[in-house]
Length: 605
Ligand code: AGP
Image (tube, rainbow, N blue to C red; front, side):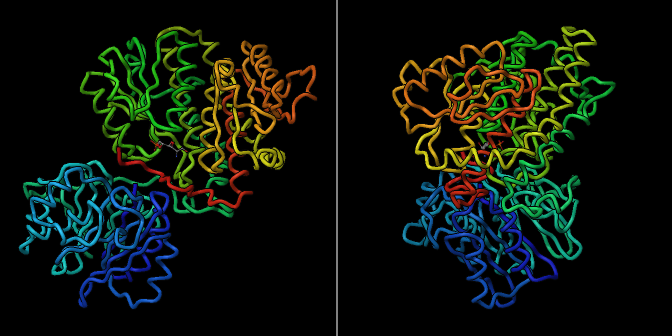
């Protein structure tokens, strides 16, 4: 959470940073600020509110300088107010911080900081400790400070008497850095760097990077020079713009046929799933006795679909564990358990910590990650990248369907590795998987009709979503999407479970969305729908287009999904639910891409 940016070079740092903060705003948007270091000293401009508010404030000030740091905040310690906005300054030190300093109270006492701080943040305490140790040698001050910190941090630091230089250090929270044509930059993620260069590096933990207009240098905490490992961004800058859509969420929903196609097609060889480029060996797919998927939010919902697929097709036990709960439930993972960590950002701290724990227990691991070189990718034994490209909207859409695509591929490869499928079965499954982009296009071509359907729930206070089996997994994600962007309370419920209490909440004012895509569950699902209709509920039904309904008049609305084999119906159904959530949010006039209180990348526990 929180976006950080630093630039030093020959250009005006203020404009570069404000533009970059807009690109990073999806990481947190409570408040924003910048600091500029110049011959005139250090100038800070910060405030609660969005980056556009900061831009207005900066326009009223005469800010000059070609070296600076900037921050967009998601509040952890201290409320949302101007004083708590970053950068924080103490003595000669000015810094921005992403992460949480767990021992900040001890540090306040240890360094007698009571009454000397002007904010409620843990971050200002770090500035004060740095100032305490600073005697003109930034490396020594950083080293000594870092050794006192407990928690997670990505810090970008200016020292008043170190002109044109930005220092950075991190633990867990990410920083990438780059050398541009006229200077150097650092950022929380490549989104802000890609307009300037495709070459970047991920800062290793507990290393100090110094950026100057001449480039970047890196040292370990012992002070020894360390070679930088360069990476290349493989998407172009246009992919992080809205491309004519009003919101990133719509653009990202519309991109799904392409990115799912890219994710799948690049991994088909001779009609079969192939992970040889990633180096994933068949034996880890063949030998494991169980699978444990760890992930959060949408990524966890993708895991639930994976569980249904793998249990049905491979016949081994799959647990899907919320990464934030993993450590607190005495996890039983061992060398026979293949751990699959799923994460768009690759930086979600709960998933990262759970993965590290599982690896210590001896579990082989594969991560499914979207952002290249992210911490989760680096912490796992094997990584399979989704080809979603930059996902900027806080609500995840294309990351989810590309994660599903990888899980479909993994299931098929696992079946091959275990000798479970004939050649014909494998080819048949893969050819159905290859149809997903075309089926998605069909749903997207009905955008206007889906928009109309969204209008039927826009005034609801609560929406229930019901289904069984795979349909229930689809709805868990559909319901999260609706809650997240429309602020309508919604619950996905396994329809057989309704009678055990929740049906009490169904009235004529409760729209119900039902998904019926699985032949083996259809009759039970349709009876469950009757039960809510008997309580007055208006039902929007999502069902295959070739399905005959005896009495479709009893449904308030029916949306027909293009037909695929049952196991793949997740794709057209999910994209429909994404669009419903999107249009409800849009028509309510909400900030679709930046729902309140959320942030795209969750790097605090
Ligand atoms: C979904 O729309 C959310 N933005 C959220 O649930 C997200 O999927 C979750 O925080 C996990 O993020 P990750 O995929 O980056 O790990």
